[in-house]
Amino acid sequence: MSLNTTETVATFVGEDGQEYEIDHLGITSPAQWGEFAVYRNGKQLAEFALIEAMLKPQYRPAELPVTPEELVDLAKAALEDDDRD
Image (cartoon, rainbow, N blue to C red; front, side, top):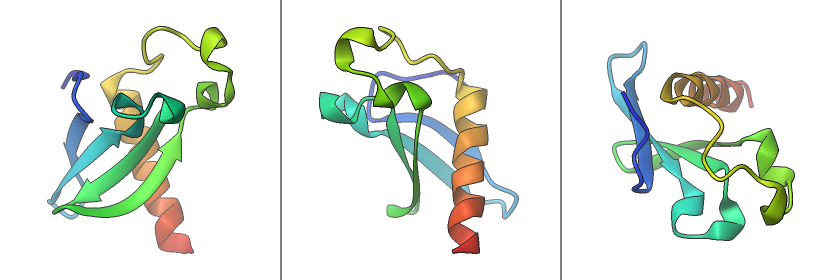
């Protein structure tokens, strides 16, 4: 698994056996740098953001400061939080 430069930056298979996509919302909107959405079958299920997304653009890292594995962990946590609501 690696980070892509397209909107979908990573995919993973959940415990339910279904494939999920992690989209970086900031690819097409720099104002949303570090913000992500989790999709399954084209339906958005959850959102999450990196702590660095709160920084002003001039203070953000040039590259996303996370690995694909870390993004998957954050996405899974966002899905779990969404299930609890």
